[in-house]
Each structure stands twice: as C-alpha cells, then as structure tokens.
Image (tube, rainbow, N blue to C red; front, side, top):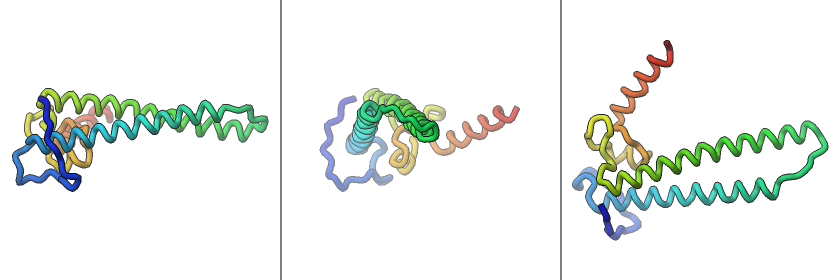
Length: 140
C-alpha cells in the first residue's frame, strides 16, 4: 500500500476523517520514520562517545562510577534497539494496510493512542485486558 499524500506541516489526524485515509497513513509513516532516524542518530552518537571515552582510570571508585554510567547507557541503547524493531514492524503494517487496527479485535485503534504511541498494536481496551491477564499470570 503505497501512499504519496502531501501533508501540510500543521496537519493533525481527526476523528472527522475516514479512518486511516491516505493523509493519516502518511502522517503516521512520517512520524515513525522521524522517530527511527532520531533513535539511530542517538545510537551513533553513543557509540562514538564510548569509543572516544575509553580510558584507564586509576581510582577504583571513579572507574566503578564510569562503568555504571556505561552499563546504563548500553541498557538504554538496547531498549532503543528494540524500539527501532517495533517501528520497523509498524512501518511494515503501514505497507500491508493493517496499521491502526487492533491485532486482538480488528477494531480501529484510537487516533489519540496512535499519536501518543505510534507503534501500538492493541486498542486501549485490548491492552488493558492484556495487562490484567499478564498480572494474574505473573502473580502465580
């Protein structure tokens, strides 16, 4: 599903429009692509910073502090790597026409939810059910 809608920079999807029309699809595609580019740019800066920042610190406490900072940065980058995979998945759903629809119910996901979390695969109600079910099983 290729969409080449031209968007005004001030465009915001509304419930008054047909759900997932060309403009909405293009809006979310651009949002996802920009988000991915930002994450990849941050990741590149982190890698460059870590390569430049490697040094031998004689003080044990300072070295431990730096290692803790590096570990935290690497965990953050790992979360972002997983987020990039979810963004790629959302972009594939845009291409196959399933973007914006709940994987559990097939119903449209609200535009507010998609705007806040463009990688969402479940409607708010389905997500809440999923989290309640997960909590019950986790308590066993």
